[in-house]
Image (cartoon, rainbow, N blue to C red; front, side):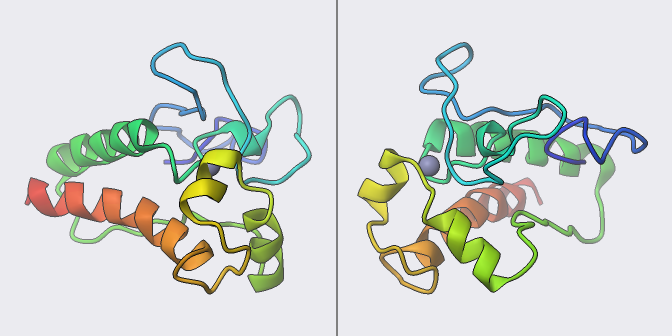
Amino acid sequence: MAYQKGPLYEEGAYLGKVFYNRESYPDGPVYSCMGFPEGRKGVDPSQTGSCRGNDQLNRLKAKELEKFVRAVEPGALYIHFEDFGNYRGTQAVWKQRDPRCRKRWPDDDLRSLQGGAAGLAHGYSWLINRVSDAE
Ligand SMILES: [Zn+2]
């Protein structure tokens, strides 16, 4: 599973739904949050499901992962959420979060419990809790 069908993933089987950061679902306006600032081949990674402060989005992603776990029953999951190369890159992207994430996690420091650490953990918690309930 990948967060997009391309670029870089054109050759791999994409098994899931591409989620967007939306003000409301299913058809609300799309907005940018964390993600590589520049789009590639028409894909803007800052719009493809990256907002941790959007619990409607978190719920949809967690439900899809639960569906996958129930169907496949994998022995383990590798969830690779952040892909910004290194700590510095992840810190830079955290600073580009949208207003809803800024309000919820105001600290610009990626390590902060009022900042990046809490925001990123929040997203993982949605996935982990849903999968744990699926067992
Ligand atoms: Zn956000």
